[in-house]
Structures are given as structure tokens and as C-alpha cells.
Image 1 (tube, rainbow, N blue to C red):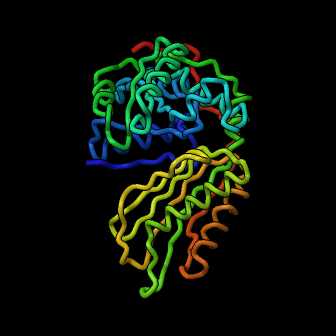
Image 2 (tube, one colour; image 1 turned 30 degrees about the vertical axis):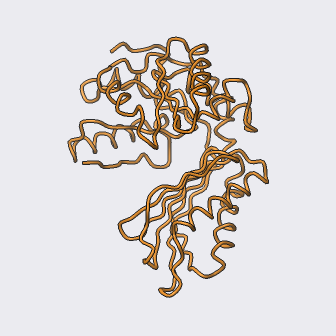
Image 3 (cartoon, rainbow, N blue to C red; image 1 turned 90 degrees about the vertical axis):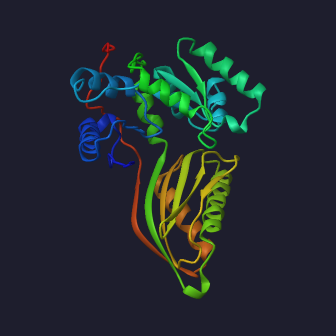
Length: 314
């Protein structure tokens, strides 16, 4: 059985108690054996702020596994070479620090890479982080995922590195991103039901084009479209790359539910306006749009509940 919990409105580091409550609830209600915790993508210092207090204060309740950091090949290769992909230097700083504190580095999307590209990227990581185990996986095809999970379940070497973090630079990097979370109900006339799946793809293409025109680097834009009991997901993580569309929806349904999660280097107000304008232009009044929840923000300075300076041994 799979279930999901949420630490809403904050990151794990700044709401450590919320993380423990959410984890404890899943453990108790569904008797979960394994919990996968996915932090905010612009977060770092997880070893000092999460894994060390877990090991010292909750060693009877939870057994932390190694901290795994996913590396997008294009973004990682540019950051490791000192290039910024158009992003602010402080944003690139956060990505670099994520690799520094990792117990495992996972090069993702290897299904898109040739053997030479994979070898070069692995050599680059190994040269910069020689003591950090490195794996290659594909979240799309599943390649390498089972081996990584076996590694996680058989090791208790979690949080074995603490990175030296400049919180002024860290705060600047997080604040560079505008955040947008939204839930939207879409209502079409029964005689004019759009292709909901293509609608998602076209909307994401418009957002990508607009961000590229404004030279606004993208952390990620994710959308889930649900009709009935079927869902499709569309993701975009860069200005020029391929948009990923997965899943199917029931095209006969006149009602759809759209969930949006976006992190882009622009003001939250501009990001919300960009999304609304593209959605409304695409639909041209043919589908009723009900914005049920829209939350935009710019992250405040990270203030972790705990921050350890030394590694707590297992």
C-alpha cells in the first residue's frame, strides 16, 4: 500500500517537527516500513538539519538511509563546470552544495544519454567528489532504480557529510525563485470537451516559450491533470529541453482537475500572471476556469529548527 503525507508551507529543515509528525502519522496509520522523503528542490544542508537530529533524537523511531541527491545531466554538467545556465550564481551555489553533502549521487535520465556522455559525466563527478558513491538511473525506464533501493535498504550510513553552508548566499539563491502552487477546476460543455492531455502539453509549451523569451531560468514546472480516476503528468525543467508527458486521462469527461507546482526565476506575481495568461489564452473562454487555490510566494531566509556541526555516528 502506498500513501502520501505533506509538510505544507515550509521545508523539512525549517519545520522539523512537521516532518516528524507527518512521518509518524504514515508509520502509525498504514504501518509503513519505508518512508521516502522528498524535500524542496532548492533546499540544501539536509545532513546537518535533518539527518543528524534524526540520528540523535529519534534513533528508536526511525532508521535514516543515505541521503541521495538526483542530478539532472544537463544542469549538473553545467554547474560542475562553473557555468550557471543563466541562473543566478547563488542558485547554482545551492545545487553544488547538494552534491557536496550527498551520501549518494544519482545521475538521472540516462535513457537520454549516450555512453560517452555518461562516462564523461561520471568522470567529472568522481573527480570532484571522489568519496561519494555514484550511480546512474532512469526514473522513466526504471534502469538502476532497484539496485539503488537495495543499497538504501541495506545501509545505515546516512548523513556522513556536513557541507559548509553560507546562509547569506543560500537565502539569496532561494529568494531568486518565484514559487507558484495552484489547484484549478476546469469545466467544459459536454458537446465541446477538449483533449485534456494535449491541453496540458500545449500549456506547458506556451509556458516554456514565455520563460525562454523572458530569459527566466526554470527550476521546474509540474502539472497533474485528473479526469475521473485517471491522471496524466507533464514536467518541464529547462528552457530548451524536451517536455515530459506521461499517463492518460478520460477524454470523455467534461470536468478536469489541474494541479500546478512551479519554481521559476521571476517574481511570484509575474509567475502567477504568466500562468493565468497562457491558460486563459489557450482556452479562449471555451472552458470555465475555477481557480480554487492559488498560492504564490518568494522563500524567506532559511531558519532550520536544528543545525548540527558534527556528524552523529550510527
